[in-house]
Image 1 (cartoon, rainbow, N blue to C red):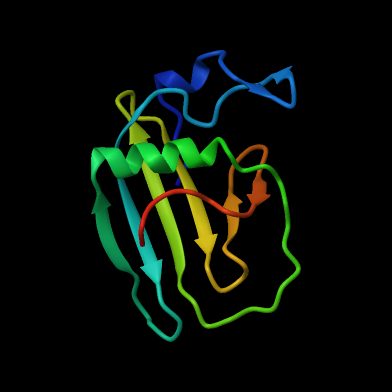
Image 2 (image 1 turned 135 degrees about the horizontal axis):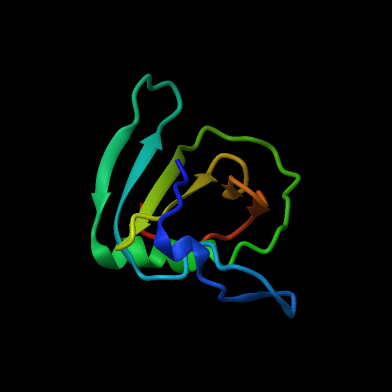
Length: 120
């Protein structure tokens, strides 16, 4: 789901005090979210507003690498894909049934908790 556009080459950002590229350095202009409910065979797809897409982009930069050890429950899984004006796309998955665990794939895959993105 990730795709690099012109903004992927921007040398911006810091992580743990060290220079590091940002996940998506430019403002997100569009996005989608797919929600898989337990037992459903097809996800529910929704287009994000510009503001919602930007909240997802901001949340992607806050994934700190925590992993939860909790029991699974019957809650949905959400995957959001956001894109900036250069065509760079990034995806993130939030598993509500596993302590709202977050997975951000691609190079430097990250896991985390407490993803502040949108009202689902």
